[in-house]
Length: 167
Length: 193
Image: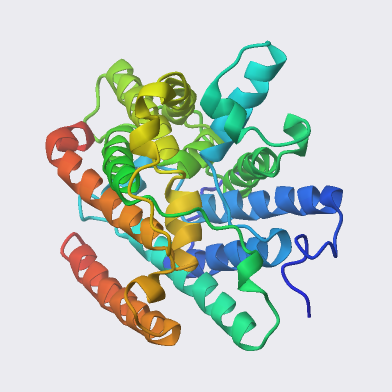
């Protein structure tokens, strides 16, 4: 029952992901995203708390948070990821760490810090690996391609410093 | 055929949302199935041990790009109606570098954080909290960042126009680059077997 199945071939995963992205263009007229859900959630939370923020007000979608496409799509992502992990026998509550990792708190701190950097950066770049690199990449947007090259450059430079976290 | 459906008002906004949920399910399912919900596998890309991130991303971009190219060539889709964010070179370059740094530190990018969390990864949950904090920090410091955020805007951001080449030529060149990248990826991975 709980036998862990292997991951699918990356090229097959890529074609399937491309078809999901293409369906999104064909149906909704927009690509897929992820990080945009954070600013939408914050914008709707700010409004219901009666707080004001220039950036969030300008980003906020019309209607309620549950009528916001990116929010609904990210909830779907969570469900899809969960379903795939369960069906593949890969669902496991764990702190993912390097092979010789002894300090789980340190790993969690790194995950949190990396998340903060990405949350900030994705707003600055108007999207993340999903909304800019994949979506804008397929639409041949100049800024998206520049962004994608910068993401790989930033990651390859940083890994030189954090490499031992994963050894 | 009139595509895309929602902008042409062929489907209602509620149906569009429901299909958006399904698109999300597909997105999350595929990422997890391909192993991109696991930070060890994602970081393998930067350690040059496991090139799944590159392979999945580029195959996906090529697939969707070719799909759009042929749908538009056949006159089935109006590409003008697709939402694409404008290009702002400096903030996108800096944002990309910082996001890449965060990716190497956290072991996830924003989308794979959601999938990692969905498959039980506790570190991904913390990364997810971090995304909100980062997004909030950007919002509260917006007054100071706004001028940089709006700088270096490209009035024309369609890459074939920027490079003054035909779209079909660029599509062909990108396929060549991808194939070369795949060959290099296989070579790098075979060193670790």
